[in-house]
Length: 234
Image 1: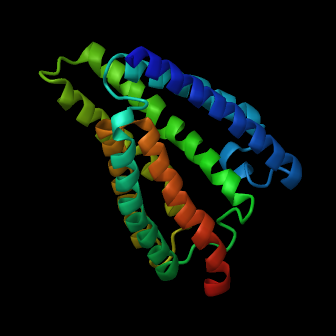
Image 2: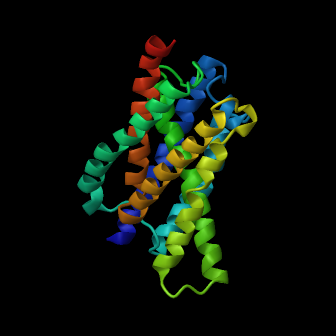
C-alpha cells in the first residue's frame, strides 16, 4: 500500500512538473521572459523546471523510502488543509504590513491573470530547490558522518539548517537605506518562521501539505494583494 502511494505521488509530481514547464513556456512566449529573469536569469524556464524537478523528485523518493519524511499520506489531507487555511493568512498579513511600513517595489508581483498560473508553479520550484533537495542532502550527510542517538534529533538539526536557506537567499543589505536594515532583519525572521512552519507540515503531515501551504500564501500575498496594492499604495 505504501509503495503504491509513493509511486502514485511520484507520478503526480512528475506530471505536475511537466505541466508547470509547459505553462512557464507559454508565459515566456507571451511575455518575452520578463517573469522569469529574476529567478532563472537567461535559462529557459522549461529547462529550469527540469533541472530542479529531476533531483527534487529523486530527493523526495529518498526521504519517503527511508521513512524520514513523506510525500503524501491520505489521513493527513483534511487536517493539513485546515491547518494551511488557518495559519497561512497570518504570514500573508505580516507580509502586507511590511508592504505598508517599508514599501516593496510596485512591480514586485506578476499580475492577474498570469499570476494564477505563475505562482503555483513557482511554489513547486521553491519547495524542491529550498526544501526537498537540501533536506535530503543534509539527511544523507548527517546519516553518514554523525551518530545520532535518535532520528528525531537528526531531522530537527537538518530542518533548522534548511529553514535558513530561503531567508538568506532573500537578504539584500546592499540596497538598505534608513530603515532598510531593520526591514531586512524583520524579513529574515518572517521568512525563517514561515519555513519553520512549512517544515513542521512536511514532518508532521507530508510534502503535498507543505506545498499547499505555500500556494495559499502566494495566492493571498502575490495574487490577491499583488493586485489590490497597486490601487492602494501607488
